[in-house]
Image 1 (cartoon, chains in turn cyan, green):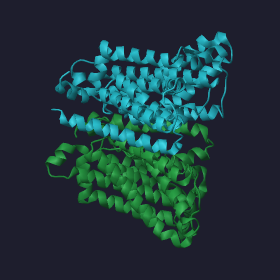
Image 2 (cartoon, helix red, strand yellow):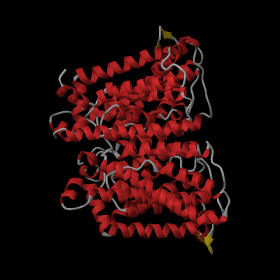
Image 3 (cartoon, rainbow over the protein chains, first blue to last red):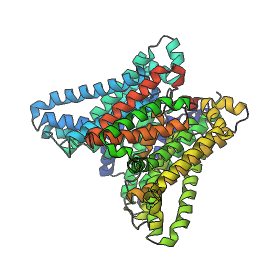
Image 4 (spheres, rainbow over the protein chains, first blue to last red):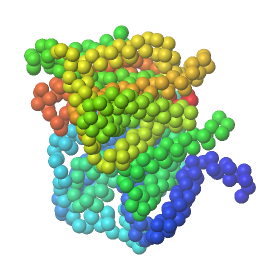
Length: 323
Length: 316
């Protein structure tokens, strides 16, 4: 590999995030070793996978919305709603799992459709449109629920906890969603259209793409991902909870993970691979802090700095590239 | 003024509806109580307006408000003589946070959404790290007077609001406002015609930080010390600005309309309370109204008046 190609590779944010991930793992290994422990034991690897699965699934969906030049602030409340719909319909009975999952996916798709239509038909800025939808869902949740409700049968709880060898089922689910999104983006016509719309909507429209349809579809897919994450969290909790989405901060956190993975907030540039790297980076950072028993508030500070620094690095690299 | 007309009309209708249910609202005391309650959000919205009209976002204001209230309580700790030094310190912190936001956004070319999101995490983490997880200490009476006291029958917060509003309108009419508007409308064109766009944006962020400081001082006095005092205020402020017809992406809208938007939001909360749609469903109604109001504005105007989020950065 010649020096030129290494330099060219370093310009790709996806490579940068995975290099950063490797660097962080090495750094973590040294720090934990100095502390007299062992980083990345079987337990902590499983922990990283468990922790990142829900955020990862949401972030993959968020990637699609951001690539198309939009964004979705409603995912956190939708996750809570999905967990409640799932647990209420299942009501602890195995036979109700299929209808419950179907209902969650239907509700999620509907929310995504509303998001997309408000943005494209009513021409409301995505920030305001999805914030508004988030408030609507929040009101309904607060009105109907005070605390956890419903019950998830034991067989469905396996989704959250069981694993095949060292790999949790939830991580496999995340991998499946990520691979599907990767396939969509890099191998299908819709994928190319998403990049085109995010890159320049006007040019995309003039080239004959029905841009509104593409934006609506990405929002439906993004909401479906949030719904799946809600199912996963419901299976972990054994019930639905009205605060599970907001407690996890999935709205801003998923956007942060996507941007950390090198996807441009303005749309049109980036991909799912970077997002996976971004989510893993956040999860490894979390695990490292837990193992070193660092105060949880330091975590927030470091996380904030990491996100800003990462994006500053990407911005610098783009600057060095001929326009 | 002309651009503020639609939102002022909506505001008048809402105020009339409130007065219809609650005649006390028409008396000076009732109306002043409303303005007093609205003042923090209106000032915060004016600060957010400067940032939005320059084509950026400031998501850090909510956590900045919380941070400043917590810092004030800890440092003052009931000591009357510490009031003024701490007030000065808070203003410095607010300006400094704005400066950092602005410099990272312009010089390091990081989207402001990310910069201020990072700042939100850093501020909330740092303040609770310093205070040990829960707010401690107490504000002095002198500090609280800004939020609850008054000059005769007129609350201080109303006077501060009038002063801040006048200053904001004056700023937008001065050269600064024109350069800021030009920067938000088309950053490249503004830069080529000699506007120091980076400086304008940095000042906008500093004004937002200053507004958050004033809001923190008013809320600290009015609502007291808690870790939740600023929670969600960034979204309320952005919503208020957009409700006033100011375009996200920059370059359009008036500061008067933004402040009227904040009053409208507050009036809406009051009205929903009066009609007994309290607590929970309030959010749902709020969400529907925000989408409807912005959609109504967007449909009336031609397409170019509703730029997409990416426009601000595509220019840089």
